[in-house]
Length: 443
Image 1 (cartoon, rainbow, N blue to C red):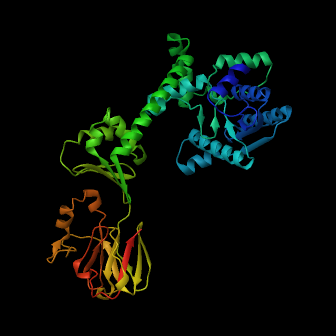
Image 2 (tube, rainbow, N blue to C red; image 1 turned 90 degrees about the vertical axis):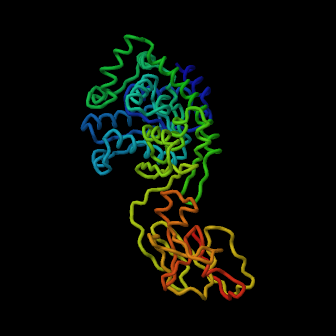
């Protein structure tokens, strides 16, 4: 067993057995007791961490005392934390299991950092991996869920992931080790336990080597996921363009990819779009512009050539004023910076759409920043006549979700000075006769 675990650690470059100090998560159960013993016998510098979740009364107290004595027997540093798990779960509106997972890994990382330890080792093994894969499959987590438990995830390592549960039991018996049983592991209230008690025994009748088979599958799926990840990165580099709070994805480039929906789902995952919604987005590619899709956090509009993604505005944009001498204006997430230049003779007009250069002596303060409205008109720079802003936005092919967020900066007399990020009004442009310039930049 020692050689098996040593080879697994070295093969997957989990950590340096000779040089790295490891925090071992020990519950007192069979798996974690075996992990602690193996790492100690391999000569790894080890510290012990135990979580008391406040869920099992006297049994949990006995677990903590057992692990404390175990660490003392090995002569190892010991750390324990007592959590109010149910209260935290209710406060955050999550399940008790999810709360326990969040609390323990957050605390493990705190201990790792404060004690200057290299990694956190948990006792997950092949059977845990099989359970996770099947549970993920029933929840529809996609390709990422099918690789099961990661061997190494940041500072968390799983040295026993190549070992079967029966092998761990045999090792424990051979070594004469003691451990604690957690009665909650037999409760069918929890999904994982129900899977372990009711489902997996049936699958093992079909395939007695189920755990090893699932482990091999996880390795192959992990390799396939890496191939997909690189393909998605290459596609993203070709199709994606980011501007301030806006992401553009070129439809033509996406259509040329293999498995377009799968690739697009991976690209859109950070924006919160589900698999079923992504399939609808792909189906809308040949359709007319303007089709809109909303995730909990973002809005996507199918435009002529691009998918246009913007954050959803959960609050209505109001009216904000910029007074004379004021340099910064923050309005519902938009930040403007104003700067007065007293000598226009040496001023160079910026070519960026994000900055407006205005004749300061034609402006009447306070300036007002507001959303555009139907009926708004201005005189776009370079034009002598006036134009409805709605027609201007159509001419500029502004996507629907960007139209909703267009703001205008108006002089105190109500005249539009600048369609923010798009065009200055010709009446306020900088000319040869201009003496002072006001620049307003969208940051």
